Length: 78
Image 1 (cartoon, helix red, strand yellow):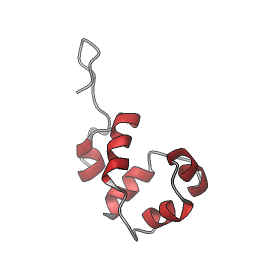
Image 2 (cartoon, helix red, strand yellow):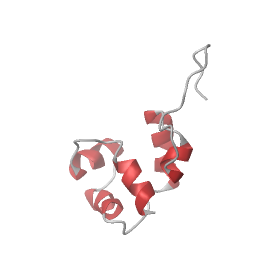
Image 3 (cartoon, one colour):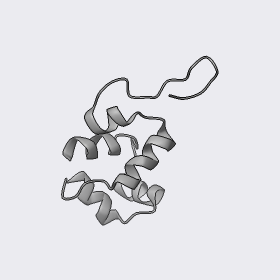
Image 4 (cartoon, one colour):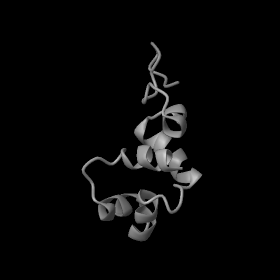
């Protein structure tokens, strides 16, 4: 849980907990809980991060590189 939370929060570099909370329309308490590993980032938020930031599930969940999804010759992401 801690590694997933850390990777998720790393998608918001330089932002404060308050700024992350505003971006995600979440409470600052919730973001603080994720940062302190009191709770895990919910799956729907992880799913949104995959779509929004273009990261791979394998990276977000297990830390496996590459971090970002690749595009094929036709420009489609896989």
